[in-house]
Length: 341
Image (cartoon, rainbow, N blue to C red; front, side, top):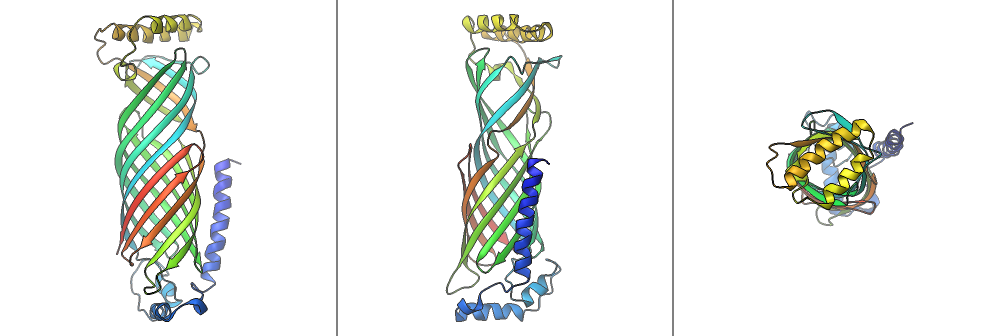
């Protein structure tokens, strides 16, 4: 069975057990509540909740559950740096035939850095099920280290837009909080033929610290894990002038010529066509809009990493969240402002 499917099934069973416990127990330990909290939860039970969403919302309030307001909108700043492994590569020139050079090109560490600002509308469909959309934009920067045929480093900077859909399952027993989030996000980069899909999944275990004087004000701190899988097949084109801004002439070209001479005939022809254009550009000649076409199979070097985060709920309308991703070969930072109504 696929490793991702196993992970999803495991998390699904774990979180579902929390939901069952939540729905069959009181939300709070009443014996530990102060008078202000007790009055607040008693008021929830007497509330006449007549909204359509979330479904089962009225029943949740009748049992003293303090569920979130159904509609929300978030503005999110997100940055991420992670290592990418490139397992195969095909290249061509200006839309011509492509050559598989996977066995003849060797890459060093490839580091991808993303900065993005996104807008996320969401709806609580059930007291424990939230669905949302994501749309935004930002930049992506990829630092590529080439070891063979020549030692070379290049940094590619692109503008990108993103869009996606996701869902969150959330449960609570006492002050213990469990949040399981899954989404598909598509990143559209101008040098890539099709938007690149990424599957993101995260599981968080947290604890609520409720304000002594206001039961609707709280700090939630959590620890969790984040998993990401990106589409392995990426196709696009990059101008030669962007890849080799200072390739020059001389030893680099000679080294590539010598490397190409050892390739099988089909790969050799295409490699020499590309080297010819690189040499023209290095000599200062105008190569027009000559582009190197590529097709890569890639994957994140470490799909899992650790999450540390917190959310401060000022009231039922405003919440602010900060989260840090650490360890593994990925680092992340997120800021989120959420308004609910």
